[in-house]
Image (cartoon, rainbow, N blue to C red):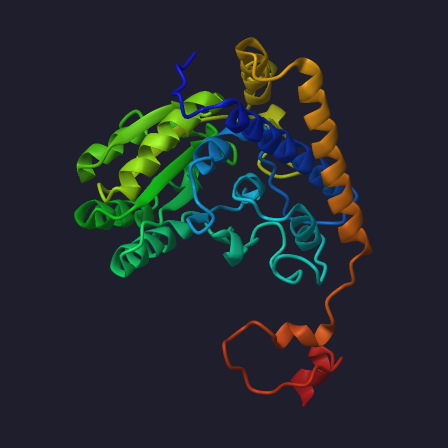
Length: 342
């Protein structure tokens, strides 16, 4: 077990546990909604809760986070409102993006969540640009971008690592290596043995972490954030983790994963490991953790109810929020066929 620093006090431990259990309960509810056909494009992050929680524990409200197509856990760890998130998943007007982004494009600038994105690797240069902005403005904001092992060979990552290394930008590159890019094993497509060791070519630290250990993610995340905030440049973190479910709802994992493999990683569950540490360290008792679980479950249920009762966006809003200034339009119900004949 990682030896925790004195900064990881009881309050922080319990915040991490509540954040992680909230993520899991939110994802479980989102899966139920998806199974009922109420949302599409759902990519579950169950099993990966420790990665953003350990890192975001060190971030300020105005620090930046950017995510992927699998980004609910990033949003929750950064403090995005559960009700607005669930409303966004269900396409409602009260969502973080007025129901226009859905599950893969949640953003909340007021929380520093600059956006999830369904395009693999696309947010990596955006995070690098956000870090450059902070540096040019002379503020100590840090930018964190999460991406999967499938994005680790995208040119956008290597271009960004090079630029961030040259200019010592305050950006942290976090590869959530959940061992599969859809159904392709990471060892089949990642040359050189790991993603972390690619940092050597850019003269920056590269660290491999146990992404199912919240304490280790906290320690490694803290070092990377402190380094970035001090002006010492970027860090590449490869967090070895595991998604418990398929790439998306209809994905049959039995086609490419064995039951023994899945059982092995479930036995290393990040929530179970953190709860045991909390009890052993005397930070809280088992009954206290049950109270936190009940509170998280209730918060998610309230978010789901809020979303279900929220209105759909007005059709005319399709023209809003597209550009800063957009020619005046009037929504009509003209069909595509009628439009083509006009």
